[in-house]
Length: 429
Image (cartoon, rainbow, N blue to C red; front, side, top):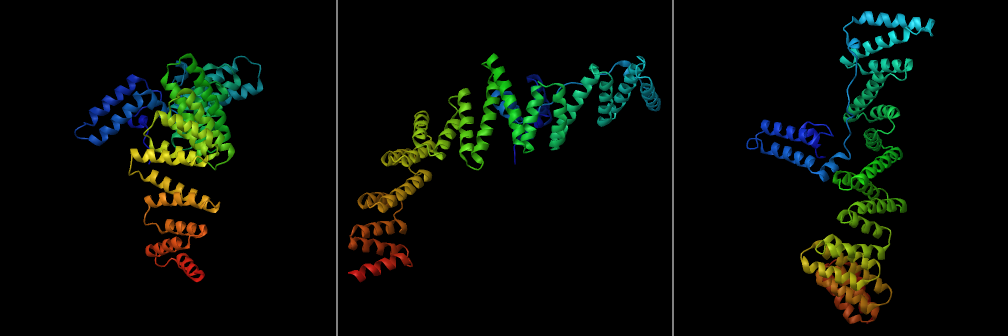
């Protein structure tokens, strides 16, 4: 289950000031005494800490919709409590007059006043669609009408926000697009559209808006290089898209996309472990083993006790054909953590793979070295005894092979392969 939004827990909207966050926290603590509501208090405390820390808040904010701040604007005469039938009657009459006398300068201002009066009534009743029609009608008569513009823009943003919160994503997108036409540089709306299009699965459009959002954040960060919040907003977006690229169907394009996203993170945080590790892992996927080795060696120098790095470095060496370096790497890891099952499993699988490859290539003595090392890790695995027996048989040492095949039967009495091999050896003898 996804973690609840810190804003929802504290009953705040994104963009809340530090004072608002602190006030909300104090009020909730008063309501939920820590001694009587310890579990609830921990949730509140965690949400408070997430919003106070710029790094954690960036992670919270990147995929949280922005609430477009503002309010509806009306003049006192537009708020007058005229009877609604009177307003409707005047509108109908003025519309008729305008149609007959389009050049009469007195009609438009009177009609606009009554549209604004009706829209005020509709906003009070939350009849947003009707109010929007009135403001659009005003702007058709007077494209410069500021209150109608303000109200229309705020209505689009307000409704879109609540549509998005209730998963009506397509409806939210349509309204935010209309709002963006009115204010093309509004970064909060651009950011909202990036999130919404991604949720709607329209990834091309989402990518366009994410690009605009990141470009804006980068420009702002250049003005204020110490802004950790902006820095981490950028990092979180790249982490998200790098992770999505890795989780998608692996193609050269998705692998390259992942590397590019994680390398972008390293521009802003060269010590980001996750980014560096994923760059190396992706290079492994692309079979660029020498490049992966260099990345992992650097990472290992900084995090020498990280077993994941040790394990991946071992596989990088192995795939690059540097067998001894691979096994030495895993041995050093096991020296630090002797019971680590991941390292033991990697070493076992690598020994088996290398041994088989050497055996098939006719390098029987070297193959036996690997199989016998593997036997130290898995002394009761009949498969390993079988590989040793088969290698000895190919090498020409039938007596030693017979002994190993008999060990296979001791461990797996019904093993047909071992029985057949023993029969053939005795027949030839």
